[in-house]
Amino acid sequence: MKRTVDFSMFRCPLCVSSMDAASGKSLICTERGHTFDLSRHGYVNFLTKPVKTSYGAELFEARSRLIGEFGFFDPLHDAIAELISHPKSGHEAFTILDSGCGEGSHLNALCGFDYAGKAAIGTGIDLSKDGILKASKAFKDQMWAVADVARAPFHDRQFDVVLSIFSPNYAEFHRLLKNDGMLVKVVPRSDYLIELRQFLYTDSPRRTYSNAAAVERFTANAAHSRPVRLRYVKTLDQQAIHWLLKMTPLAWSAPKDRISLLKEMKTADITVDVDILIGMK
View 1 (cartoon, rainbow, N blue to C red):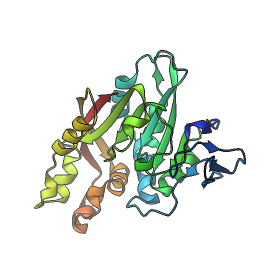
View 2 (view 1 turned 90 degrees about the vertical axis):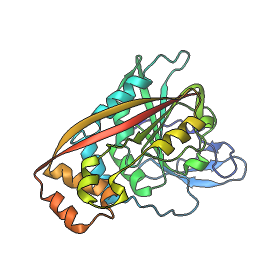
View 3 (view 1 turned 180 degrees about the vertical axis):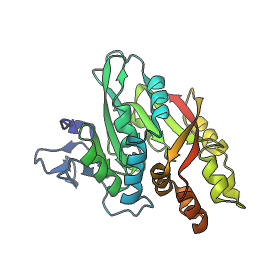
View 4 (view 1 turned 120 degrees about the horizontal axis):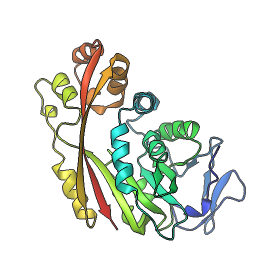
């Protein structure tokens, strides 16, 4: 069943005026008539010109399978849901914005939890039209939009939680959160996919990683911040290994001979090691 969208949440990303959806085919701003089309699949494209990204349909297909079919990030979803589940007095709904949502698998999983007796209403935005198209086809209960986080097409104080998983963006997060809202950002730690790093890059700076800069930036931008570490190991079968290699940027510039060797493996233990950074408004 498709979610009934409250279009009053949106504002024009060009002139910040309210939007009217009376035509049923477009959102039109009330001040200057800027028009943004509603796709037949249910998403809105707020970009005024095409944007090239490194993330395409093949990557999003692999990520959706690794997350949805294999459950690669299930422990992460469980941890985030527990951290954000608390009573929201006076709120009729529990609203989550996934900024940089890709194909929507993380947001869809998190909307499946119960939050202090309330169901979550999810909205996802991403610059990649391929990602949003896949999300809108697969997950009808959430709202999706092709949009730039730096010019987020929403009125102020719309969301209880703003979520950023492996995404570098901070723009507008404070504006978008309700007064008692929560910013949740997931950043890799040094052991994240360490098996891939060490196997693919035998003599390269990419064998190691530090999230110190990302954590410092979060602390500077989010009040009352705190980190929660999550570390676990998943044993991937050969198919899941192939999905992971298509999903992660670590494989994009790796030596082809090392990629081929990894693809031949029947199983591989892969570490997920992250900081879940929490900031309260």
